[in-house]
Image (cartoon, rainbow, N blue to C red):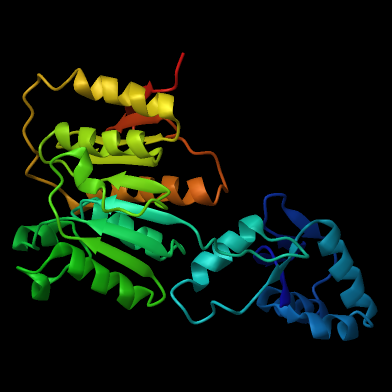
Length: 322
């Protein structure tokens, strides 16, 4: 274990500033010794070396001031040199303290239904954020047009199973993942019954048939008391959420979907990778923050529709019970 600075350091002619939630300034001349101390703390100093360094008066003075300001945290090198290194550092910034470092949770299991433009990109976000157990559901094969915005695939994947190609891509990013694949079409709620009962959240990323596909996923989560999140793209709008975490909210959203069943809707055939990635980034953040809450979830039982260029909120709807 090491002790490390929680924030970046800015050196100026007026002193040293540490940029954190509460910025902290050290008003003193910047000598080589002080710079060396801060450089060591930025890299991290092993517990075994701290006691020796504390014999130096200037080190001890700076060290305890930083500790009192909660600017020192415990960290480990366990993920150094892996695909989780930067994610670990991010979470450690938010969740570690002087005595305890951040630890990834082992029991998070997310099922992604649909491995297309939303599902495959969200899967990569989750895999690199330490979500270790992922289930992939899709019946389709990779088509040349999919390379427009489905970044898990390339030309060598054309004609191959999406779930198998995505599984391989995720293993290449993080070999320690636990990935289950289900090559099947979802045409009713019971088609999802092979999923493990320990799934904590389902990502509904299928759009065929329109509306019905969302209903199938939603009915399954209502029957099995699972959380679920939605997202989709259009020509002029993107829709994110809701992230439904209560039985009442799931039932309310189901009622709203069923009310639209009589409407005829066609699938949007065109897409831009950039607008697609906006949806995937928002969903990825919402899911990761749901399990590792470093901020407030903006889509908790709530759906938002945005204009994809201006990011103006065009519509917002809550599915909480009144």
